[in-house]
Length: 128
Image 1 (cartoon, rainbow, N blue to C red):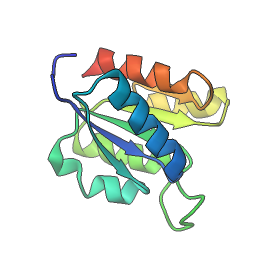
Image 2: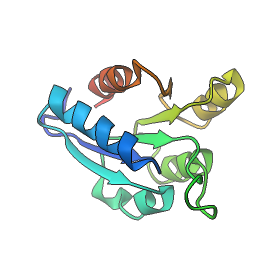
Image 3: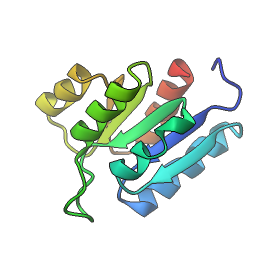
Image 4: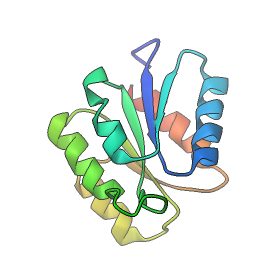
């Protein structure tokens, strides 16, 4: 990691998963500053804080039906800061979905599951 105290944004509408991922990352590296957001719109309002990486859920409108999905938020993030590493997180095992997120600028597509948190941690270490 180039930055000793990187700021990581976690965007997911599942509070339990968000809290577990935040705890996992802090447990593995205490220098992380983590901010969590239940919608992509909330994240976009804080992009001016210049996070070092964003972990973004693909399916963000299970709770708030009007919320944008992860692809739309990814496009907005990349429009504002094309160099910001965005790691997509999803329970969808679709190759088409994964390749679409990479096409729009995500650095990686992580499928939710047993090793997802470890994979996210390694990606953050490699990209910030």
